[in-house]
Length: 289
Image (tube, rainbow, N blue to C red; front, side, top):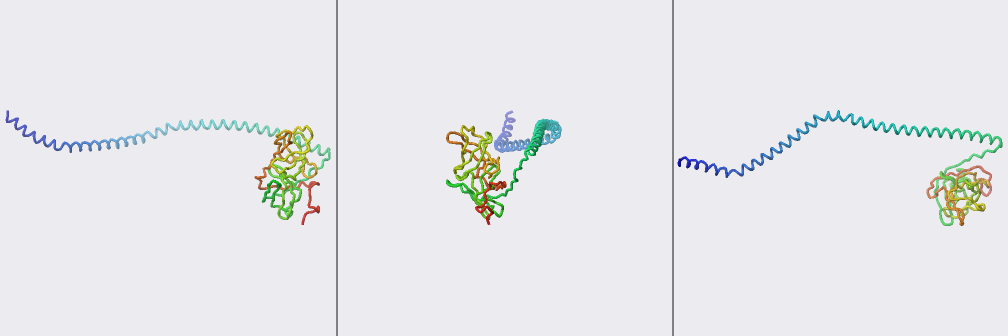
């Protein structure tokens, strides 16, 4: 019995020593095996997930088509509703324009009948030339400008100077290739005008500021800020109705006018000849040579 136990101890002692010697190596190997297994599991899971997505993507595409189709239908319904509203507005605008067209035709017929009844002489046709502004003098003592049009181009002294906004002044000097414009804000400018609302006559006098004032208004004038000022046509220089500006202030200090034309932004003007008898010519009364 003792001999058998001794033999077992002799056999177990080398095994225990061997296991203690290689325990660290076994643990390291197990750790590496677990890491490889985890990496393999990740690759397997990724591949499996990709395979599942590939498999169900056609199904999701089929299922999403009704949803996108419904969204497109709803969008088309909204656009159709907007188009119907716009169509209704266009119909209303068309009906309104047709109404104004009939009114305009009726007024034109009445105007023609009145002209024939009064044997009214029609207004002369206006001729104009366009010119570019090449110089602007806006000092404390003068408000004028130079343009690239002279008498060889048809520019004449006294012609009205117009922009897209309205009346800007008149031609005061004419050379062969250029002309000088006297702005309505110049202290030497005097323009017969009319308060459009009240039909009161006045003279627009420049004072070398951006707000000329009205002279010779009747007592207790009803002119108020916002009233439009137009040329009156008196004096035979300019025709009636040319837009000049609006009343900016009216009080004890007088009535000031804000011109429609902002001369600091003007690049091109029109020199308009209305062929009126009061148009000023050269000192000799003829075109300068």
